[in-house]
Image (tube, rainbow, N blue to C red; front, side, top):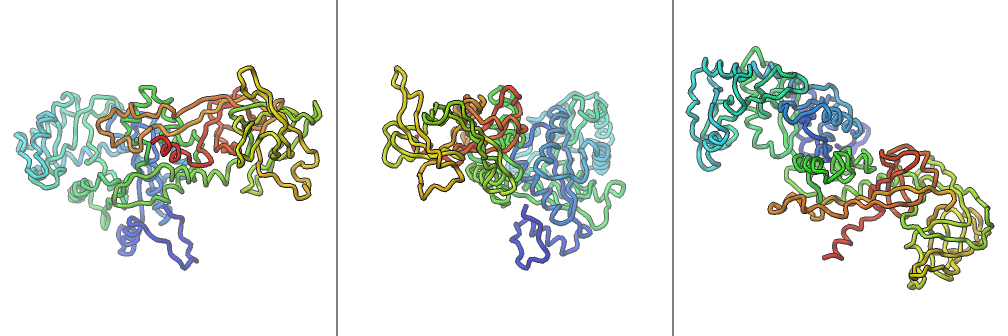
Length: 573
């Protein structure tokens, strides 16, 4: 959602179509001039970034109009639901920066929904059908052909009432019968062709235990739950657009029953918006669950997963995710968003908040031959040049350092401005040094690089106009610590894995999505807590993984300093 409007600002922000609809409803005085939304996840998995888009809309719209957004768990299918998911959903919403007004559950309304279903049966608008799911589906017809009436459609009311009671008493087996609304088997909208509104599930519910055996379907529970709570704007993704007439139909029926409905000058309004789809990503809960269960990833919070907890563990900030969602906006048409846009939002945000530190991922020893043996200097490293209040931290400098192997080249091209014999570079926060040579092993591989330093070029000293083109990072061999880095990349190797209908999505996984290696980091990092936002200078953004211990630090690569994926893919084509 866009930022709250400042009343003193004469220039108004541009409204998206949902905000425009809400503004019009308020101008017309609908629902007493209030805005109340809800975020209604099913607790059958962990939230992913697609849910983050809905969260920002539901909570942001309520905030913008001084309204309320409630959290409501759609717990109508006890087979797939778990308290673990309930807890994770709460944590993710709060991490994104939002607070709900109240917590509700669809199960709070089971008795109300049951009473509504009984009332529909009594009005001759619902009946028990004993056909199989396959038979019911076949009789529904096609978009161009009307459906066929169920042989049970005109079942006597008292018989349907008695069977409905048996469904909930546990006397009916799963799949043996369902309750269907009696609407119109010839309606052009197939959702009106006597939809199933209750089925039997003999599985303990995580809140209600064994109290219920008959459970409402989503289309029957959702709109009524909105109504019971006082929701004014029910915001859904585009696949529910064809469900909206049924949503309105059931609310009309509910309002028509004085003992259940009848709220004056009030009814919820459903508005649909496009899903969030990302390249190199799948959003299907079923596929994400498969990845977890088959150990193709290391749990729901694996940093390669598009889950909110995965992004959090990888080092994404909530602000970066919210900024990305603001960037792509809300429309009425589906789109595939380039994941590089999300990564760009992450870079922009982390550049402002991350602490700059030195880490060497591919080390080679650098020896400053004219630096006194045993001498140690403590340099001051600026924590964040983008934030003057971030301060600095100490880093030790000594005769023997670790530097990146890629920063040395014995026979370098003309525009190589790093370490090469005869060339000067600056060691960041320290001195200007000139490379004097290197040592190789029996295989011809360079194992040590030698240089000499100029003691009059310490950072902060006047250099008499002396400039060098290269600045290299380093860590002291004697004062650094060995650590593990996990270099994460995109989980899938194809741009749109969801569109590859003929392929097993497992076969589309990127085999190089995770590389683990050792590195050296400055010992200052032992003082920082898990999930700290870091920039490994000249390498990328990282954070401290939750698996870290005082004996073994582990870092996750959040995102590189630049987007190299597109260049690599182009080269591979």
